[in-house]
Structure formats: C-alpha cells, structure tokens
Amino acid sequence: MLPSPSLFDRLFGKKRPAWLILLVSVLLLLLPFGIAFLDGVLSDVLQKGHWRVLFLSPAIILYIWLVSPLISRVGADVILAIQPYTSLDAESFASVLKAASYIHPLQEVLFFFTGFILGLFSAQAAGFDQNAPLLRIYWFVSTGLMYGILFWTIFVSVASTRVNAALHRQPLKIDIFDQSPFEAIGRQSLLLALVFVGGITISILFSIQMDSLFSLEVWLVYLVLILVTMLIFFLSMYPTHKVLAQAKKSELDLVKKHIYKTFRDLLKQSDENQPLGDLSTQISNLALYEQRLQAMPTWPYNTSMLRTLFFSVLFPLLTALVRKVSEALFQ
Image 1 (cartoon, rainbow, N blue to C red):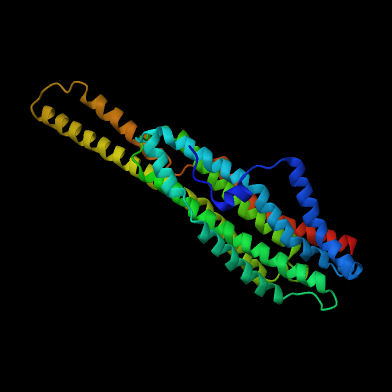
Image 2: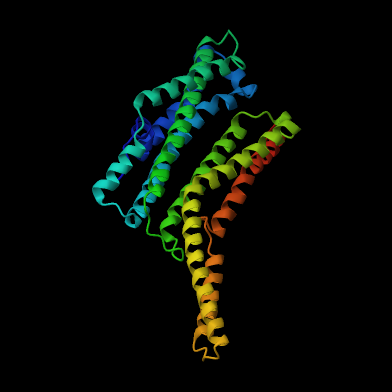
C-alpha cells in the first residue's frame, strides 16, 4: 500500500528511462550555451566564467529530478516496514495512509508560483547585460523555475512527514530488543540529509565566488547549513525516537516493579527466617534485564549512518577546496 501520489510525485517521483534522463540532461545543460551563441556573447560567457552560474538552475532542477524517485522509494520502504507492526487491518491502514498523504493540488501550485516569483526578484540582483536579451530572458525564467521547484520540493517534503507521524500515532507492536522495522526510517533520514548536502555542493560548484569562499560570512553560512543537515537527520527520526523511548520506559517501569516486589518478598522471608529459595537469582536476572534495557537505543540509526553523515557534511568543503585549486592551476 503506497500513499496517494501528489502532482510533484507524478512529475518528479517516478523513475524514468535512462535515455530520457540523458536526453533531458544534455538539452538543459546545453540550452544556455545555445542561447548565448544566438545572442553573440558565447565567447564572453566562457571567458568571464559566467557559464558556471548559468549551470546552476539546470543542475539544481536535474538534481531534484534524479533524487526524487529514490526518496519516494525509501518512503515506500518505510511504510512497508511499519505496516506489519500496526494493529490495523489492510482497509484501515489504507484509509490512514490516504488521509495523511493527500496534498491538495492547489497548494502545490501556490508554492511553486510563490517560489517562481521570488526567483524572478532574485534574478534581478545578478542579471545579464541588455546586449544579451535572449540570455537575460533565459536567466530570469531558469532562476524562477529553480526557485519554484525548490519551494515546491520543500513544501512536499514537509507535507510528507505527516505520513510517518500518522503511522507512529497508531498502536504499534514494538519489541524494544528488535528494532529492525525502524531501520528503514534511519535510512530515510540519512538519505534526506545527504540530499541536502548534495544541494549545498552543487551551489558551491556553480554559484559561490572563490574570492569570498574563505570569508567569515561564508563560513558562518556553512556552519548553519551543517546544523540544518543535522536537524534534518534527527528531526526526521524524532517520531520513531518518541515511540521507542515510550516503549523502553514502559518496559523499564514494569521491570522495576518486579524488582521492587521481589525485594519485598526477599526481605519478608529473611525477617521470618524462611528459605530464600530462588528469589536472589530472580533479582539478579531482573537486574541484568534492566541493564540490557537501559543500553537499548531509542534512535533508529547505527554507527555506520553517523559516520556517513559526518563525512558527508565535510564534502561541500572538500569540493570548494578542489574548485579553488583547479581554478588556480588552470587560470
């Protein structure tokens, strides 16, 4: 059972044939050069390095198009992983999923056009000369499309969190010692963080000026982006953490009650000079069980995921350094 597809899912979320991806990619990346050639400013664009910023919009749009099917597939894996552990029948589960995943098409259109208009205003700050009218039009349209699709993507991504939240609100049959059903949520959170890092890397490649790369402002922005990446990773898993933490607390409370009761029985038999039997062994076993419960994690990630996240946030910086060195060598 999969969620109701939105307009965004229909356009970007489906896996396309490799030949179509290659064709669209080549056309989008070559289009600004063709327009610059028609305007007679192709040599200036290449010599002054304007080609790099012209690549930004198609690169971001293609990136969203390429990663969206993967995000959709991982989201479907989460649903399939959790479904067997709910107490809902197939019909009720489908009803919950449909209600949580529905996005009104007008909302998607509104966010796209809001981003598009903001993109037009942003393009005015760094437009091309009046002697390149076609390239100027391309710059405004491509920047508007990039912002529109970015706003659309952010809106759909935020709205899609309702599905996980709705599933976690259902009664779940949780075994705190078997968290394998929630591993898919950890992988989903890691993927979202990596996708965000990929967007940062593309922005560094095609938009940031090398002269300002190592300024304090750029480093502060980079630090904020790292913190946002970490927030995306952990906030995506927070509903799962909340459910696992509650299950762990309930189990610990139950064990503590048994330990307390067994201690009371032990003291009572000791005061009455009765044989203690196996009460001391029971207390030892219960204490060992309590220790194992205390050691169980409540966040669905592992060391490998954290290591991947750590090195991924350093990747944009490495990209900037490589770009700086390459420009110094070939300038």
